[in-house]
Length: 107
Image (cartoon, helix red, strand yellow):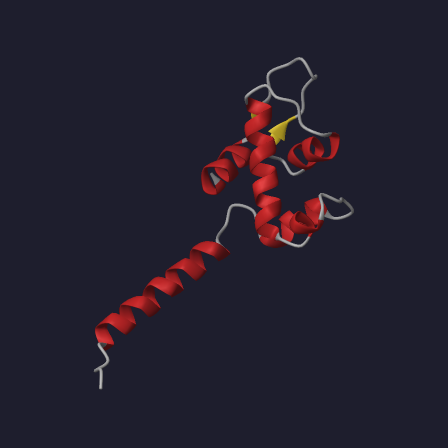
């Protein structure tokens, strides 16, 4: 019969708790992400997953600062969410401090 290594179990519990806390202290809450996507339709995989919504915002931000086009809805989620400074289509796009923090966290 295997013996329980209590120190190992306590260490794992501590690591799990830290991960849970770090998830709770995200730059943008899951609730806010869901609010930004309210009334949109990016397809079932994205519509039903906050993680996929975060990936969509990340992709939009990367595309915009690289000079690529994004769809109207994705672009306005980035702008209305406070991640991206709105600019003319031919102008360079700039991240807000929130956008930079979000991209660093979700990249």
